[in-house]
Length: 159
Image (cartoon, rainbow, N blue to C red; front, side, top):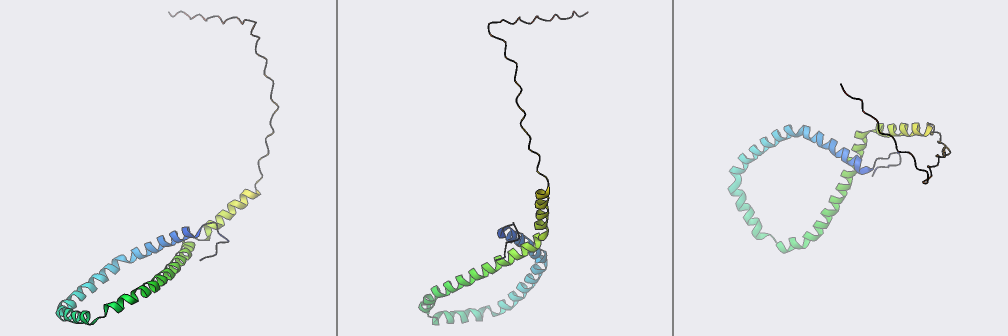
């Protein structure tokens, strides 16, 4: 796997970016591949239509002489070795996708993050705001002194 000491972006994100880039690249090739495969399929159909009868007889003969018990005995060991090969290939593909994603994302993202972090570190911290001493509020009028009720305002008469 790739060394991630210089980056803050996890490898799975690079792998996703690499997979996306690979998908776009393969999709661009798709029309040419479809044309090639359709031409090959048409050619194969012409050949197999001619040889179908003889091929069927040949396969029947092979089936009658095959030792299926020996095939079953080897199936477990072959399956285990195929699983190990598949695991190795998957790890290699993942590593390749991570490397491809790192190229797609580029070092520009990491460099930009470093610049921002450096700017944050070099800027002055805002001066601490000192708490002002609280101003004493005037005492509420005593309950025994009754405050006069406000007089209602008179409305001006409309003409």
